[in-house]
Image 1: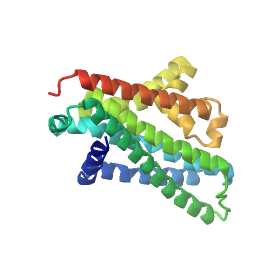
Image 2: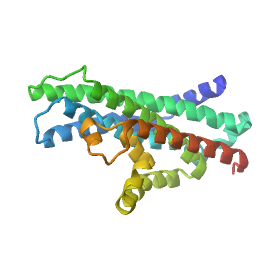
Image 3: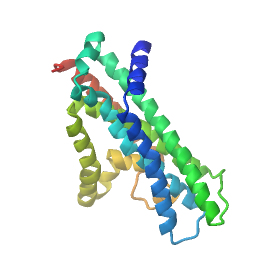
Image 4: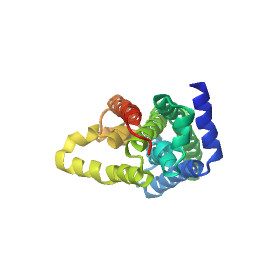
Length: 246
């Protein structure tokens, strides 16, 4: 297993596109925090800090696509055959991808958090407001956002293994987030709280968002997202071992 993990890390080191994708995540966080500060009608306070840093979780859209690249990208470039010929135990290959990409998804969340903290502190200073580094709600939001990034990276691996088409998998993922969860929320109401993106929002939400009551409690979002991650991992393992490579 260790050799498979090293191989996956080596693949990531030699391919440019995943790193360009992850590099965009801190830019999204920076833009989101800046937009929040500029549009905020109320004075900045500690509650606003957790709201600003909740943008770390939204960067999970990038780690979701990052995870899809792990398997669907290999099918697109037709390197998956060589991968399975070198390691016929396909379940171990998928397991290594799930682990490596989840870890890198978490690290991407950490990088986005550091960028977000720096930008938020600069904005607070510009507004002559003291930035409360010890605010527990802010750090809880950051931790939830990092976990959301890791979970979506693993879910992306599972989705890429299920769909196998890179364009198709990305289209399904983005359509689900942009359309399906919103439609379900309008038609069925509270059921939408249990869907993956909304569960992630509950895990990485700021204090004000949690107070609205339209999301699961933070622990509930974490449990729901963990279940989705496990389900996609199991489906990826089972379908990969049954399907033909070509």
